[in-house]
Image (cartoon, rainbow, N blue to C red; front, side, top):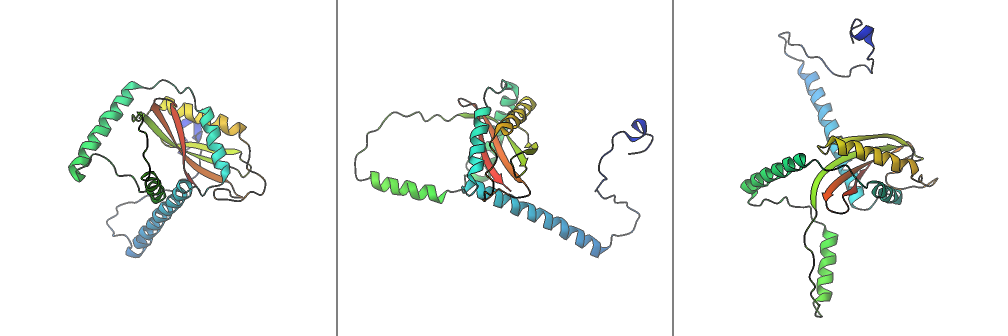
Length: 233
C-alpha cells in the first residue's frame, strides 16, 4: 500500500504472495519455469486428492458420529428461510434447460448420470429376489420430486473442542439473502452444539482442529432447506 494513499496506508494486511512478471525481452530460465510449473501441478494434484478423500469419507459413512449430531443440529436451525427470489429461480431454470439441451446434443441424454452405488444396487437385487416369491399389493404413491431452488456450499473450521474458528461460503447460491441467513443460522447452531467427547478418535477429528464442508439446498417444498455433509478434512 503506497504510504500516501488513504491517509498513510490505513488498509494494512499480509504481504502479497503473488509474482510480478515483466517482459524485458529476455526468455525465462527454462529450469526455473519447469520447477514452477511442477510445483503448481503438485499443489493442484494434492488439492484434488484431499477433496477426493474428504468426499469418500463423508459419502462412505466413515466419519465420526459427532458430524451426524452436528448435521441434526444444523437441520433444526435451518427453518424459515427468507422468501425465494423468483427472478433468480427463473434464471436458474433457464440455465439448467440450456445445459440439458447441450448435454443432449453431446451425449443423446439430457440427464447427468449419477455415480453408481454398488451397495445400494446389491441390496435392491437381494430385495427383488425376496419379493419375487410372493405377490405384493400395489399402492398409489406420490412420485413427484421436490424442485431444487438453490444450493450453496460452506466450509466450517472448528477447534478440537468444537469452538467455531471460521465459517465461509465456498460456493454461493446466487441469492445473497439466503447465503447470509444460512451462515447466521449455522453459527447459532454451532454455538449450542455439544463438543466432541474428550479423547474421541475418528475420521475428521484432529488435535489441531476440524474442517468440514456442507451443501445446503433449498427446495420448493417441505422441508424447505436440507443440509448434507460432503467432506471432512
